[in-house]
Structures are given as C-alpha cells and as structure tokens.
Image (tube, rainbow, N blue to C red):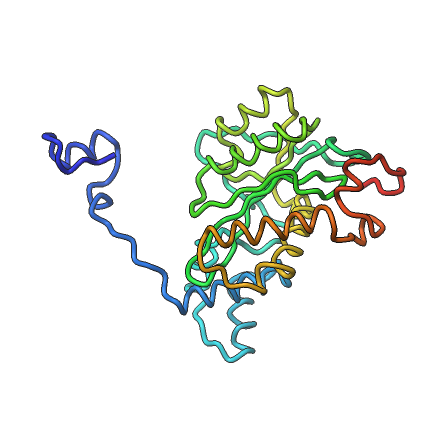
Length: 275
C-alpha cells in the first residue's frame, strides 16, 4: 500500500491510510528456533490439557525441566491463537462492529449429514515456522468437507474453504463457528446468508460448542502433524492432504461404530448414531 517512490511523502501516505508511520518501517523479526520448539510443546500440552492457562503450562513445562516465564508463554499462546478453555465471559472476541449471531444448537438433535456444519482454525507447527489450518466439518459424520492452509489468520482463507465446501457438498441447514473475527466478518457471514444458511455462533462460556472440531484437530495432530517436521508449506499441504483423505475414507472412528466419515456421510444410518 505504501509506495516509497510516490511523490507523496510516506508520512502523508500513512496518514491517508490511517496507519502509524512507524509501522511502515517495521521489519518483523523471525521467530527463534527455541520459540518454535516451545510453541510445538505448548500445542501438545494444550491438546491434552485444554483447560491449562499460561500459569499451569509454565508449571507443566517446569516439571519437564524447562524454565519459561508465564508472560512469554502467554505471548506465544496469543501468536498461536490458542487459549485455555473454561467457563468465562468473552471467550472469543469479534472485531469491532461485527455482528454476533445466536447459538442455535442447544438441545438440537443432529441426526443427518448436512444438517450442521462447523468450522474452526488451528495452529500447525513445521520444522521452521508454522501455518494455520482451517476446516469445515460435518457434525453428524465428522467428515472434513474442505480445508485450507495459510501463513496468516486473514479471513480470505476461511472463505476459500467455505466456498469449496459449498461447491462440493451442497449446503447445510446450520453453520456453526466461534466468535472469531474471521467468522463474524460481513464477507464470511454474507456468503452464508446468500445461500440461506442459518448462522450459529458459540456463546460466551460455551466451551463445549466446538468439541467435534477439536476432536478432529486432536486426531490430525497426533496421527500426522507431530510425526513430521514439514520443511515447507507445500510439504505440509501435501502431507495433510494425504492424512485427511485417510481420515475421511479409511480411518475407522469409534464414535461412528468403527465406520468412516465417508461411509456415514454418504449413507443414511440408524438414529442411534445421532449426535
């Protein structure tokens, strides 16, 4: 956006764009190898103990002989976009001016595919650096309908995953997300409204609302991500693609009575499998 060769001084360009002039000259420092390793360890602990905040994570790491300050752990958690899960207000903050939609799944029996879809974002460590993974999941079958990787948390890659899920799988009756700024943006919710899809968002303190997607993340990380050290985004995308294909079509799921998500999604099953 800022053009150093333009006749207009950088100061005036920054003012016109409403940004700080100092940010124009800021060059982000690469994350150290030590912090990348620590972020991976924090991610593993977070999957096992999602209720653990920065203080407990500090103590858990201390049990392993790792002396890390609580504030440093909190900083890395913000970078990874993870937080302790427990009952409290404001579990996810939307951007200013974004509309929050009510939670529609309370007491709802989910009994068929394409009744409810859910979407979330998670952190994926690599050998050097990290990326973010977003996925659209069918609640009834646990099938991953679409997914995308991104090096940033911008809304665009969430919209791309949504568009792919809609183009390949029809549309759900209800679409559930948390209250993150990516999902409360007009660009994202507008696409759902265009398709006549009811929008549902996790309520304050309702940490169980996205539990099905969290189970998908746990399977992917323990069965794929933590077994590899991706050298590039391209390698991560290819390897995750193979794993998600296995997850959908080959891997039996105990919650689905040893069936695969593909089997449940494409074939109507007895009501005993209803969520």
